[in-house]
Amino acid sequence: MTTTHRTSGTAQRAAATWEALFRSQVTLMRRFQTDEVWVELTMREYDVLFTLSRAHDGILRLRDLNENVLLAQSSLSRMVERLEERGLVTRSVPCEDGRGTLVALTDEGRRLQRRVGRRHVRAMEQYVGSALDDDEQAELTRLLDKLRTAQPDIADWSPRG
Image 1 (tube, rainbow, N blue to C red):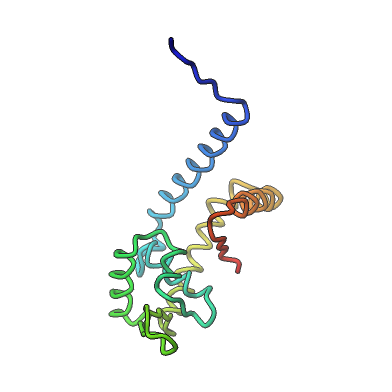
Image 2: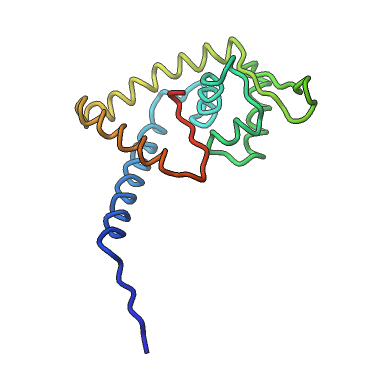
């Protein structure tokens, strides 16, 4: 005897919504990757600097930085090392407990993040702003924030603080 599994209409809508969200994100990320924005930094390096720029005093523990970027811990450690060699971040051991690593954005790192960030924002304006009007952007942001914050077992992180 074979059992057929039928998917509910709600599940089908959720799958179609996820597919649309995922495909849009992939398409836009591919578009962003080809931009001339990434001359001085890769997108992943920028993500690290951007995340640090949003932290209090531009400093995060490496493990906290790792939770907010899309890199494996080992890849992030190597990237932070390279960014430190370029003078964009510093690494130190926290004096209060001596465990872990603190990563801090340098003045040069902050300047570069802002310079690249301005170009990246112009690209976002071009790709997102040309496709969606102000009301549509506000509604999409509201819906995506609602979706993100509805995940109870995952720490919520928003670049808007």
